[in-house]
View 1 (tube, protein in one colour):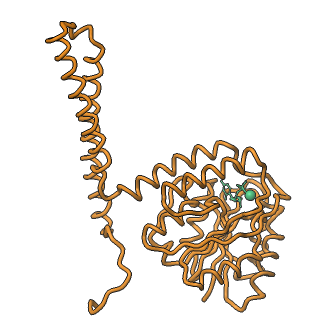
View 2 (cartoon, rainbow, N blue to C red; view 1 turned 135 degrees about the vertical axis):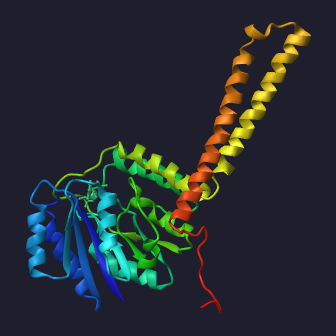
View 3 (tube, rainbow, N blue to C red; view 1 turned 120 degrees about the vertical axis):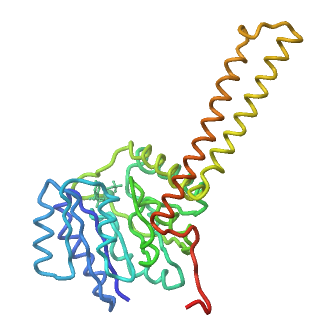
Length: 314
Ligand code: UDP
Ligand code: MG
């Protein structure tokens, strides 16, 4: 068993040497092989020089440097792609996550899980801009994805590599990996981990992250529930809207015939036109979605199912 620690780094020059020391202190105590993949996400400070200096002395430290800032999700993705370990452990590069938790994450993984998510049960961040949005977001994500975790946002997690192999990340989606993994049959667990206040450097995010997370959640929910059958979502709403349009149209005619209410003065006429138009649009969107689904799955030779075992099939 060997591990790959993956760390996204964006302007963390004052944290890098302490981080490196904390990681090797925690992992040298275990008797496993490991590598540390540091991904410099286009830092404008001395982060890359600091990383290079460490990598020059320790071959277990591998460094990738982006040409510009692509974001934390891209940085983590690059680290996952480069990782050679059987177990992959992402963590923040600002020392807010504690490498001393890594052996406990691994222990939990060995109890038979594929993903172990860290939960910053005593989170050291501001209350209004961080903890409140986080509580709401985690409740919403848990409900919509059906994977109940207290802390999707905690970067410190442990994954078996097979789980990450089939998952491609876009936008701000690194936090949704447990939900995406569970979709392909991964067993997910959660354990409380330490969290420290940020001592050096500044946070890279503000409150606007909440909106981006909600938008990504919509994407994830859609992909999880409808990526193989978009017509089931759009077609359903198309039919409802058409029925409402027909209802409202019938009402307009009824009022004209029996109540002598002129059609062109009846607001229901506009509603009817709007609903019928919307209904057709929804259905057409669903059909276009079906075409896209076929391109998506068939062009990549992606099956729409995940197999656990095969017997007598070679
Ligand atoms: N990070 C990154 N690229 C970015 C933003 C952040 O690689 O565009 C890294 C950052 O250096 C840190 C981690 O992602 O290692 C988490 O960022 P931060 O500590 O600012 O987030 P917070 O803890 O405030 O949620
Ligand atoms: Mg942080």
